[in-house]
Length: 136
Image (cartoon, rainbow, N blue to C red):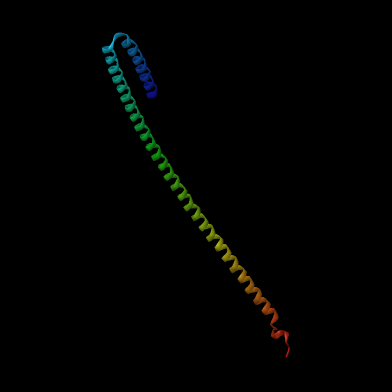
């Protein structure tokens, strides 16, 4: 909306300039000087308006950019915290599962060792001659 108002001001200034030059060319030297002064004043006012509007637009853009940057930083921080929390939970689950697997392997090894021990005793008992078997 500001750019359109600037264009309108420039168009009005140009029209005033053309009209003033045309009118003063017919009227004489005094009127030419008055027209020049009017044109300079109009151009100065248009320039000041453009500068003021440009400054306002620049400030608005800077303010909006800062707000967007802060929002992006906040969202990035939230995502980072969520990822860290998920990682902690996954690590805890993996550690718990590893402990369960370790317990199961240990239990299996103990069971196997006990079975081997019993089988060894049975085999030794079967291989040892008994007194009843030897009639001396």
